[in-house]
Image (cartoon, rainbow, N blue to C red; front, side, top):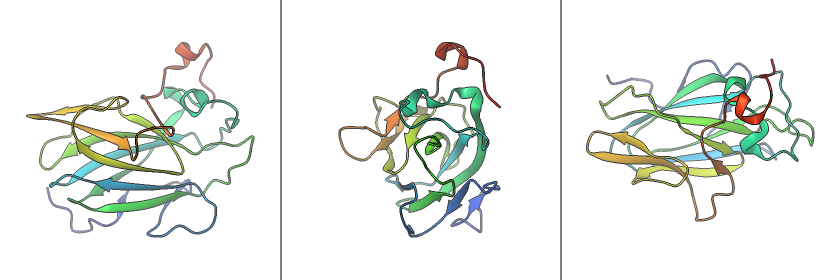
Length: 172
């Protein structure tokens, strides 16, 4: 299933996320690199647009699973990198710079369902071979991961928790 517009984002960003090949100003930006020798599809979720989330709350607990909505599917060809930015203004009381990424297909294998990983922007992350601490996706014959570049992983977390695990109901 080859797509002729491989360098575009597939779906509406609902005014929430803008694709960009270069950053402009102090907006939350992510650089995503595909280190594999085959294409990947990544499902991108973001917090419901009306939610705020204070910056003093750890990004891993700022929003629960039920508070994320689908934004887009990003197609990355082998060895491709893509930058994207969020259009939301980030203030100390509006810290929506959190994305939930799920690896849904690799080459011609997929779609699969896997839990994904949280990333706080700004960050650099890569899709690579091998299991990761925060993220591992099993595909036939290989384990893959979306992993923050570097060893500290300060801007990466496990998949979002359910609201009940955070002791509250989902906000809308």
